[in-house]
Length: 110
Image (cartoon, rainbow, N blue to C red; front, side, top):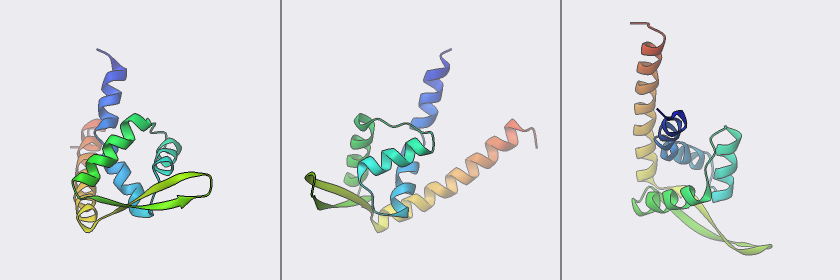
């Protein structure tokens, strides 16, 4: 069995949750999101991030605004919609339940 594949699949399962959590803290530019993920030791490639942001926007969980840049083209800054905030709250509840259950199992605290 390939451990890297399993690790990758585990990370992919939590990317949306992490991205929404970062954007909840403050409006974010994609490179800011990638930097926050990297700082937390969760690497994300632009080729993964941009399609995820588009999917979240198309699901009405995110919105964006264009901001002029002095050093290049305008930048797209993302923020949560009310639906995105509600979705994130549901994900937070799910994460707490899952992490509790996994901790119970992996630490044999039945």
